[in-house]
Amino acid sequence: MMRHRGRRAEFEAVAANVGKTRVFLVGNGPSLKEMNLDLLYGEDYFLCNLAERIEWTKGKIHPYYIATDPNVPTGYEGGKPGLQASTYFLEQALLPLVAGNFQAGAEIVSFSCANGGTEGRGLSSQPWVSVPAGQTVLLSATQIAAYLGYKEIYIIGCDLNYSTAIPYAYQVDRQKEQQRATNDDKMIVKTNRAFARLREACERRGILLANATEGGNLKSLLRVSFNELFKR
Image (cartoon, rainbow, N blue to C red; front, top):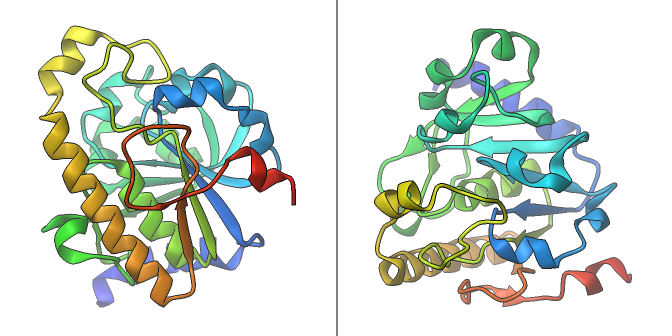
């Protein structure tokens, strides 16, 4: 545990600065194009992977960014994420792939993906040691958000429709994505099982984990209306 002291301090420092009770975890599904993301101004939220390609993300400083897939940095221009965030959560395997000048100037919290995945291992209480991963980076983001102390965690843009003609909220090289795509049915089942396990663990901790995505195949979480969340 001693070897994780530095990473634990980084996680604790971020948690100490959390002042809100809710957070939004933003995937990159095409449903985002039908949502009023301007409602997120003033909210805490995570962006992930190549969210820089979404027009709404440009020209802003975002609260959190997260990436776990070593393939993600191949999409960065200049070897770094193309969006500004107050804190970047990066799986440690990405660090050698990200430009050194970016690392020197950014607030980066690194972590390791645990073997076994979220479906098998459940919610991590010590993300500085390891965070179980899965079919979507939002599984890791959920666990980090729970550790940071948020009592309401809302998923948006998690469509789980990667084999469709428009799998993301931005343009992609479809041939390349098809080569990387896994069986959609299997992915949907496994992702729903993983989120169900996180939901149960969050409930035991008094945390609401809900899906505010418009449509999509994430059905193991309570459905809530994104727009209604801002009418309180």
